[in-house]
Image (cartoon, rainbow, N blue to C red; front, side):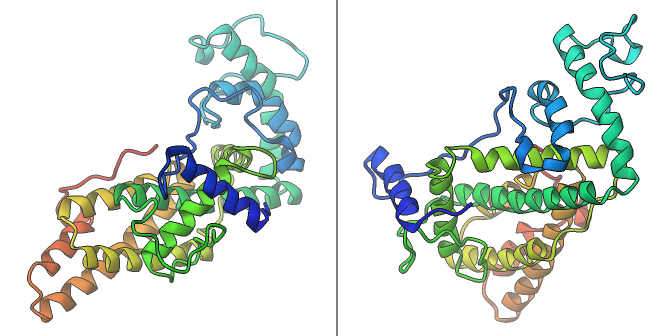
Length: 324
């Protein structure tokens, strides 16, 4: 999505003006609990459009997620056959509307399962694209949750040299306040989207997540974490370490920042790959800093750094934050 600089700047200004503050906190656009019937964007993945269209009613009742067990007992549903003579035992607890939505979707689910697992090139290409979108959105959401926990969304005072239309938050080699400001600008642009209305990017991301859920559920092997997101996780862990050390935040704040980041990565096989990457980079980086700090006799830094990102494998004291 391309937004002219003036539009992005105006969007950020509107957000600030709404509360009468120089920089107001931009609300995070939540995934709705009860999505509208058309929560899936069929035009975003045209080769999957028949599946997405058939699943609109189901997605509206599942939180816009595809769940592997939802179609148990409906494997032999046939398009146009209507309701079965007897409700399958696996679906006995489904309400009438929920069962009807699943019956509508079941033939397309069966068809696209077979096509994807047979290696249909167009479907494989779109699943890979959906996966990349999910990866990018997961890291973005995790960063936003972490910045809010650290009260850096937006940072105060604002970093110098970052204009309202500078949304290049993916450059995580920059100092953490600059990254936070750019992500804030990007969220302001999304909230007041000048190209399609608020929520258009989120809707595409929800559709991508639905397709990744589907691919995982039917046994398709998802790609590895893209190099872009892997590099971002490595760099952002370093920037976080630098900023928290500079601020001298308490151990409690640091743990909450870590948990907010890991929890924001989401659920499912795709998110699990990101979490493993994040835990690896954070642990490695923070341990090296802790040892360096101890060698320099900087009181407390080593202990705090070790406590912040100590893996659950160290002594089982901490568990991962509940998946969204």
